[in-house]
Length: 176
Image (cartoon, rainbow, N blue to C red; front, top):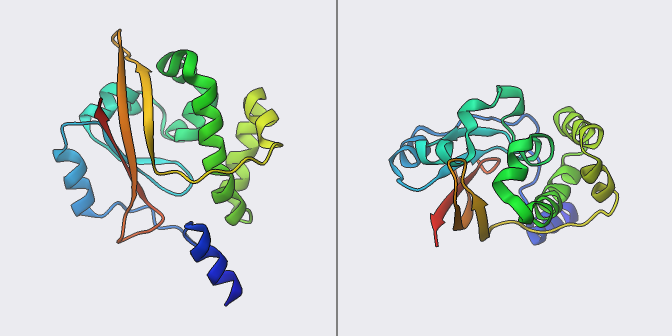
């Protein structure tokens, strides 16, 4: 009972064992109908579904399936450094601090062990910041992105948990 209470206080979904990465059809349709960039991730950060606006911004369709993960993208793919420009370090630290508590709750899951190991081996910054044990709750914020086709744009984003599958998160961007 105490453990359940701590999870409730933390605001982080309790691990459910095997994760179902199926994006509900209604959520897919909603994402597809949005004009602004939107995508769905699982607890691990794998990008499971996205719309054309998100593909134009983040180029998910050009990334191999094994690399289509928001943390892999941020720390291991050079395109993210271009996309975030001088704001890359702050954004990378923020994302790592959001990943840390989710990882710790799922620390026995081989997928989390593998991802954390891959990120530590492939990114000196991730390895250095990982040992700081910073944590942060996610949800919403603002970002300035350097667009793939040139120019900069400011976005506000919000991350929403999918009720049908709490292991999934929908992220929607709106131009500011």
